[in-house]
Length: 407
Ligand code: NAD
Image (cartoon, rainbow, N blue to C red; front, side, top):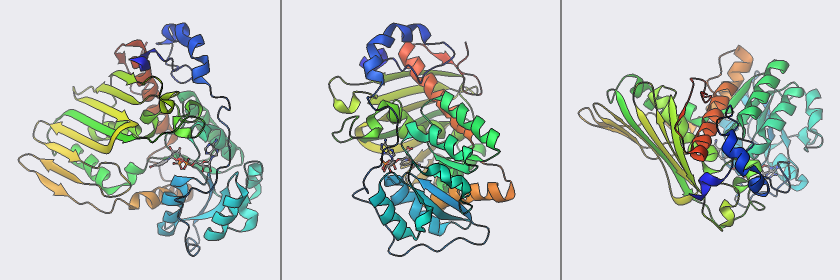
C-alpha cells in the first residue's frame, strides 16, 4: 500500500514509536508533507450554497452568551449560525472574516453591528469588546490551534470545531492556553448532544444488546475532482491526514462512547492511490482495528473515495444495535435486532447544533462541567496519531488509557 510508505512526520509524534521509519522516509516526503503556503488564514468568497436569514434572528435572553464566529464557511453559514435562533442562552455578537464583501453581506443578514465585524488582522481588538464572551472557531482544522490560542489571549472562552487540531501537540498548546487564561474550552462534538447517539449510549450502558463483542463504524463519501491548492480538506497542512480526522472521527468517537471504553491496542492500514490530485497530500482510506480491555473489538473504516454513508453497528451477546445513518445532521435511524428488538425515535437530531451553544453558555454562566472538553479532543488526536503510526510501522500498538502509545 502506497499510503503506508508515506511518512506522517509532524503529526504522528508518538513517543518515538515510529521515529526510525519516519526518519528514513523524511527527506523523500518533505515536498509531499509541506504545502507552499502552510496553514494561514485566507479569506474565501461567500459559498455558492450559503443560506442567509431573511431577517436577523432574535437576540438571546438577558444572560445570553455572545459568540464571535471565526470563519464564515459552509458549516458556519449553513448549519451552526442558523441554529443560534434555537439556542436559549447564546447569540451571535461578532463576526470574523478575511473577505470584506462576505463580512458585509453576512453581517447585514444577521444584524451584527458594523463595529462588531472583524478581519483576521483586527481580531486582537476583540479583547476590548465586551459584547463577545466566547469565540467559535470554525476554520480549517490546521488553523484551530493558532486562533483558539489568540482567542484565549483576548480573554475569551472557546468553542472549537472538531477535529480539535491536526496534532496532539497543538491540542496540548490549546489546553495550556485555556488554563493560563482561566477560560473554558469546548470541542464541538455534536453527537454528544444528539438524541439518537445519547440514547444509544444509554442503551449500551443498560446492556440492551448484552455484553458488547463487535463494533463496526463506517464514514465515507466520494470527493469530487480537486487538489490541495483548491480545497483545504485535501491539503495536509490544513486537514492532517484526511478522512480520519474529518468524517472518520465520528466513527472513532462512536466506538469509544458506545463501548464506554478506551482501546488497549490499535492496528491500522491506510491507502493513497498514485497520481490522483485529491490524494497528493492525504490518504484516501483509513482502516483501524481497536481492541478494548473487555475483549470487544471495533473495526473502523473511513474513505473520501467511496459511495457515501455513516453507520455504527454494535453486536453484543444478545442482539445488535444498528444506526444508519448514525451521525448525520438529520435523519438518524436506529434499531435493535434480537429477542427484544425494536426501533427507536428518541428525538429530533437537529437539536444537536443549538444544544452545543447552550452547553458552553451553561458552563460559562453556571460553572457546569463541559461534556466535550479539550481533553477529549486531545485524547482523540492521540488515537489518530496511534492509528497513523500503526499503519506506518505495520505494527499493533499498545495504547494507554489517555490515548498515548505505550513504549
Ligand atoms: P469551509 O471550507 O466551508 O469554510 C472554511 C472557512 O474558513 C472559509 O469559508 C473561510 O471563511 C475560512 N478560512 C480562513 N482561512 C482559510 C484557508 N486558508 N483556507 C480555507 N478557508 C479558510 O469549511 P467548513 O466545512 O465550514 O469547515 C470548517 C470547520 O468546521 C472544520 O474544522 C471542519 O472540520 C468543521 N466541520 C464540522 C462539522 C460538524 O459536523 N461538526 C461539519 C463540517 C465542518
